[in-house]
Length: 375
Image (cartoon, rainbow, N blue to C red; front, side):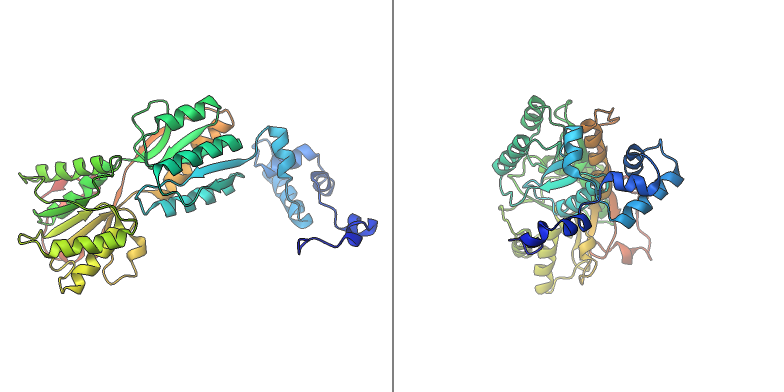
């Protein structure tokens, strides 16, 4: 028996049942002196209800400890008020932050998020997506690391709205997505190092990352060309696939230290990789940023407590979560979703690892957040 459940003799006792029965919407209506329709509209923030009435209803509901009956609501609306989130197996360490914002946003909008977990491969992503379709969730937010065409087509067959977040999804005009311009983000990171005077900038990458790597490579190479670097492939370094990104960065640091013509800067597409790389260099007595400058793609807020906080090219996780939820909920409710295909920009967060803070006191080229270099 559930520890929270009262014993049978109490549940069968009429006085106990009357005292502990569930508070209904009719109870709130009687206490507030209005109809149950007004209560429902007030609790759902309808613009048809005045602020005074809404406040009165909410105060009475809180006093009575009223909680909406989700089962009755889902039957009435023919919806479950649930959203499936396919977390994805991609490399971005920022997914954890995005999932946190998605959960908070959906709960605020009265939807319950169901999160997939332990997704290792793209096949795992696909199977989890299919399970959500079978479970008849109201909609799906997918953070997948694969092309979206088959996901979008499968969801359309069962009339389940789906919004893709973070991936590169411009390949299918029918898909709804909120993503970031990875090429422009990589351009900003490389251009920042170039503006600081670096011309030998290493770019470690995963050869198997066929979805996220190409746009970052294009942005890196475009920045080098604009700053007059001729051989834009000289300092490309493929590295093996590792589930432990920090270890991968540490191992790359070992290789980097053995180079005869060592680059003066590194731009990496993952913050955890940069953490391992910096650790290996500092262990060998190589200073960051004194000897080698480092910029990473992704969120670097978690590095602020470290000995060398990492300069990063960051994207707006909170905005991505809010926009994805907004588009999906409008689809669920059958309303016009407005702009359902959004590509957002980045922000350069300057910390200690690139040396820019120390360079501010001297003269150096400037770089605006759009990535354009000026003298």
